[in-house]
Image (tube, rainbow over all chains, first blue to last red; front, side, top):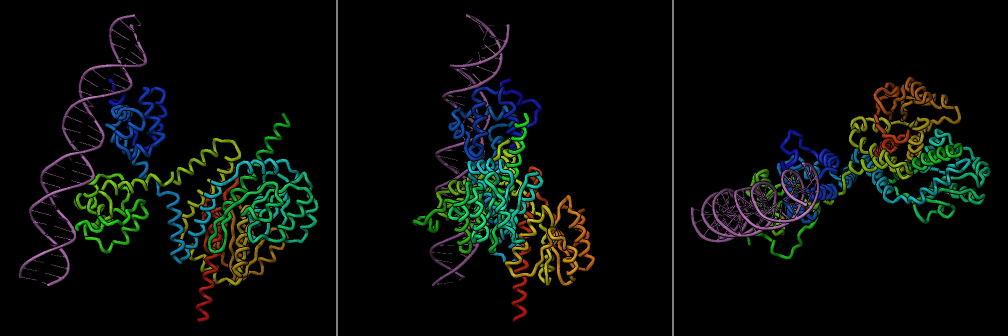
Length: 288
Length: 288
DNA sequence: TTGGAAATGGAACGTGTGACTCATTTTTTA
DNA sequence: TAAAAAATGAGTCACACGTTCCATTTCCAA
């Protein structure tokens, strides 16, 4: 029986994920040419969805007939039914991220309602997240983690708009049992607090344009004491950048004059938790 | 010239958005049957991408030849070239949102690296945003805005993990020149602060499981004074819900034990700005 | 109302499609 | 190593496809 198990009562994969799993599972036992197509299919699913049997076969470097045997071996009637699965995949996947965002943004801009405001903030947050996900500088990220992991006390410095981020960092550091000091504006004791920091500590400073003068000033002061600084800011021209050992540029989308904090938050949390992990690892090594 | 302007040098739409715009623009001047297809095409772009001329024509209730006339009227050679645009649309839209998220999450789960941690937080934030965007209860949203808009002073109540959100709300309210009072845990004057609130004020209370006892207690106290409460919390069983006039259920995804705040932040900002707008509108009306 | 033009329906056509068949090659088994 | 079985390549074929063409209907202007 040349057609393998196709005539048996085995179930035919009707959705792409099942199909994919089936192919991966049988990969080892497939004949060479069939395996060649299998690999091509999983690598270029869009081509399978749109191409003709002939064009796909050519791209994959096999004969059209082999393509049909491949389909039959998986339990399909022929190439066409196999292709349906690949088409269904494209059809079923919801409108793309960008389309959704565009829709949200359009609604937010045209509609004057309150729902539009909400959509605007969601869109701004999503955009910011997707931006930072693309642009995060990994070496900087690793450097910042290393720097913070070996600090005795982590000082967290931010005012005004950035303050919520700082307070969440402080909360998270506390939960991770990492000594930290939040420098807020309330009591006016900042100068004294800053004076305690030494080169074996570290600072996370966060500030966005328009930069709070107090943040700048305190960052300058603390950097002069030789304390290493990790800065999260919004441009290379930020006054924070010149004082910082490592700095991140985070482009937050804004809506209605208020900038999203989602990207900054994600970065801040990642930094914090990564530092926590690095410390745990280092501690474990020291003991061993 | 039966084929309309097709023979002129007008540009043929090569991408879906241009095509869409072109169709919408000409909609009025199109013959009946052609317009019928135009509407069908914009409503069921996926069918155009995958179907055959015959099947599409049948679905749209026209003759196949009309379908081709439609394509030609838009400047295409024939139906096939028109179809390419619809296929390109599916092909070009990046891997779907869900696929991207799944990828991020997979990386975050398998990989132990620091980048994985970052991806995890971005994924958690994205998930939360997409969830709240789907599930936001609009009547509740409007009600909360109305309630907060007419308050003399808005009290903002949150501890621990929720505190960053509260501080951002307070910052934003301040910028919008809306009188507000942030109730933090620092000074221990909370009871006194809470005592000032009257029924013509309002409260935004934020708390997630495990609920900070202080937040619950203060919310209870303030509700007994007849002050209307808007609660942002994470479950219908939240102790906040029973005290609140309006409450929002926000499901935040978490990563590494730290919950994202992105959805809560977006909701909080939307609330704040919407209240600001509503107040401006009302003020304008009063003057007029 | 009538003439002409545009729009439409439907049949006919040629091309390119997927699938089948069979000869050949490769792999496996004895 | 020989024989059998499986896999592959290539040619063929029926047919469904997109397209074209022409007869008919609909619409508009005179």
